[in-house]
Image (cartoon, rainbow, N blue to C red; front, side, top):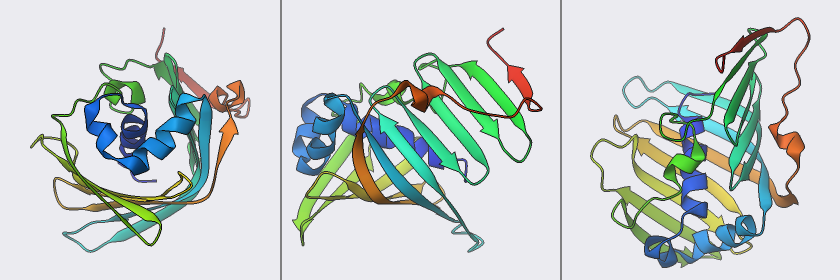
Length: 205
């Protein structure tokens, strides 16, 4: 799974959990935010596609994602990522290695809560509704942001359908969500099972 997919999840968590006047402009985001405010977790199957604009190369991976107001979990073909509270746990299935590190919202680019307090000065938001789908365009006002333009599609039931983001090099990062549902939060989302033979790298010590 491409390295920027985690940043897309960060972005989604930021958008749907942020408070402030800016997000009131988006009825589509409000549908999702309402569920997460009630403590639910968004669960969905995921197809992530990365297109390198310069070379034309395309890579695709599949997995499952859970997004909660306090963190997220991603299970893909080659790894499991769980980022909650003050701990980030990443299990590489290919390397049979577990990396446990502090969850510092100030230093960790993959920390969702780092973006929760996003202000109305960070994005220009354009939204329209077509055929029962909210189309939400966000243009980043920060010239140095990872993603400069984001398009989200949200259905009328409050489920994200697709996020397409352009980075600074105009590469395309697309995450498509299917079989989405809102589920009760469980502490199991924080847990990562791995074999006893796995190498454990604990950076908290």
